[in-house]
Amino acid sequence: MRNEDELMNYAIKQEAICRKNDSISDALFEEYGVNRGLRDMNGKGVLTGLTTISKIVSFQNVNGVQTPCDGQLWYRGYNVQNLVKCIGDNGYGFEKIAYLLLFGEAPSEEELQEFCQIMAQSRTLPTNFTRDVIMKAPTRDIMNSMTRSILTLGSYDNKLNSPDVITNSLRQCIELISVFPMLAVYAYHAYNHYENNDSMYIHRAEPQLSAAENLLMMLRPDKGYTKLEAKVLDVALILHMEHGGGNNSTFTTRVVTSSGSDTYSSIAAAMSSLKGPKHGGANIKVMEMMENIRANIKDVYDKEEVEAYLAKILAGEVFDHKGLIYGMGHAVYSLSDPRERVFKKYVEKLAVAKEREEDMLLYNTIEELAPKLIAGKRKIFKGVSPNVDFYSGFVYDMLGIPQELYTAIFAIARIVGWSAHRMEELIGMNKIIRPAYMSVMEEKN
Image (cartoon, rainbow, N blue to C red; front, side):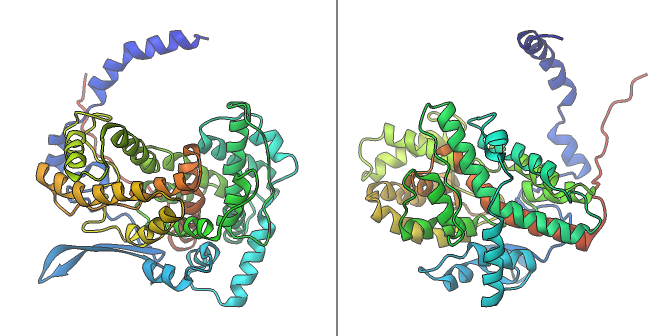
């Protein structure tokens, strides 16, 4: 067997051949009317299915013309902005909205209490699982650790492939939603202990606490958190919970589910999709960009200086030279991202509590200037506005959550949506997803 260096050298040598034979020109996509990434130039996705779980609105019909509008996100017929408002500032809504997405209707108080009790009872891992699985191979890549844990949990499930597929899948989804915070936080503690030589502590989940409270409690050495901290994290989880069937990881869930594969494999596949930097890593890029901006401007109160540096980022002259202002724009939304509009109020409250008003000012300045700069430099087919990831990394930073966990927190929220789509795929579709690819291969004799 070749050693790693030999294999890498061989791959380097062969890369040019792959590039020559696997490149497909834009002209061919245009000639055959095929959209790269299943999206047209306006960002509209190719229809591949129907769903009753959520709806995204970014355009409205005005006198027969598709016109950009402020974004809307709906969960099971309810506007997310109204859902968050109804929960109020004194309560936590993760479990309530999870029930709504999973079962398709809002729970009564009795139904919610029963669901919360079931979730609390399910926040436990098999005996020695933390030691034998999570701690045995610590890694900075928390998403990989979680994916390994998800697949291994399947080995502990005595009813992995029960003939009662619907009931069994629902049970498995609820169990995974319940333990995801533990898989993420314990994986981080193992990495932090073995790789960073820091102290090890494993706090068990407490049944009376919400998902957000448990996450903060398990993460911190002293188990302490404020009500505002838990509330802001709870809102973040709700807003990241679901986003239509067309996002990459949710579509992956449905594709794998449609083949008849089990719950653990379907969710593990979704995890593998979400960890990709084009999908789940946006908030980390925003944080890296903000650190770069702070390091290269003298006065955050000087809008002209901030604007000049943003122009350099957009021109690809500084930061990562990609020419992108991260956190601006979205594949679907046009004038605004409704999640960002809901979230910003809580971000501002937390910034005051953490004495980070100056940082908040810089975010506000970029939110004001970046869309104008982007519109002036590039042809925009729809509006440019900040998305939810523009602020989520800032919130996690204020909460003292390490960057290694940012995408994992996204997963802790999004598994609810994945689970809802898995159930809908099993019940409502019952047909393997098999899209068509047109061959543009040159025949050779």
